[in-house]
Length: 162
Image 1 (cartoon, rainbow, N blue to C red):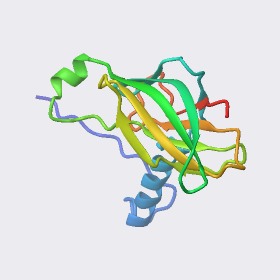
Image 2: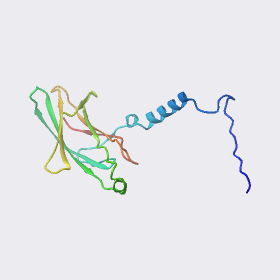
Image 3: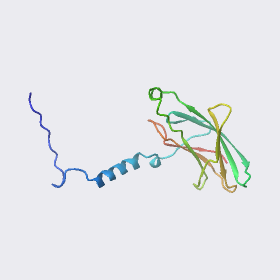
Image 4: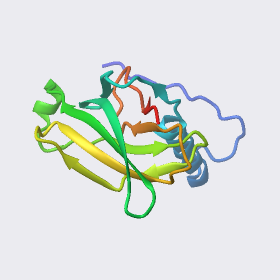
């Protein structure tokens, strides 16, 4: 059998021919930053429009407001969260998908985390409540996609009209 030879590619300097741990760490950090959802641009959607997020489809339907006991305004965001059945999900039943993360931002970019969340009469219908200062407005729902698939947004925004 003929013996095969591999070509050697010279490094720019004649020193060590391996990555240092510092170089490898920087490379991993760069890959993580550029593939992280935090580095992507938000994709706008309208209320009533299905948003593909990993193995889910999320639809923000409508929002209600009421006065909270603490003087803040309670935003109740009604949405539908449907798990899409895929071949991938059926083949990997032990790897439960992470649900999307919801927050609300006001017109100035201030973020509010949810106060409570409950399922409606149908297990796919949900209400998530946010406590916001009454003087704030211009709210949008921000939904982070923990497992974006090809063509899916890593972050979706939906104006709430309040």
